[in-house]
Image (tube, rainbow, N blue to C red; front, side, top):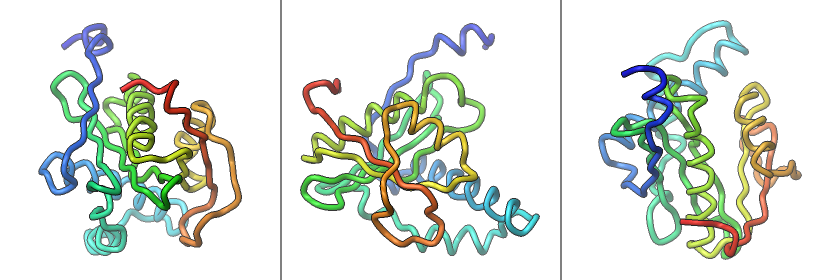
Length: 177
C-alpha cells in the first residue's frame, strides 16, 4: 500500500476484552516498549523476558472490563494498531491506562482517536474527569496529553514509575461516540 493510501485509511476504536489475542498482543507490546525505554535510560540495557512477565503480572488488566472499565482497541483500516484502557477510580473519576499506538502507525491520528474514544468511554462510565500518569522520558506521551487539553496535577497515587500526573475535565455534551 502506498504512503498516501495508508494516510487515508480510517481509524476505528471499539471495546474488546483484555484477554483477546489482539488485546494481549498490544498490551505486551506496550509494556515491552515502556520497560525497554526505562531500562535503556536507567541501566543502559533492554528489559528481559522475565522482567516483562513480572511487569505484566504487576499491572493486571482485570479492571479494564465492565462494569467499571473498558479496554479500547484501535484499528487503522483492518490493521490492529493501538489500545487504551479506562477504569473508574471513584464514581466521578476515571483513569487512562496502557495508552499505546504501534510504532508503524504513529503520526497517523490514532492516538487522538484513542483519546477521544477513552474520554467518551469515561463519560459513559459516569466520570466527570479523566486522570493519568506517565513518565517524563515518555516525551511523546506528555506532549500528546498536553495537546489534548490535559492539565498537570498533583500526584494521586504513589507508583514509583509515575513521574507526572494529568487530568482533564470531561463534558459529556461535547464528546461524540
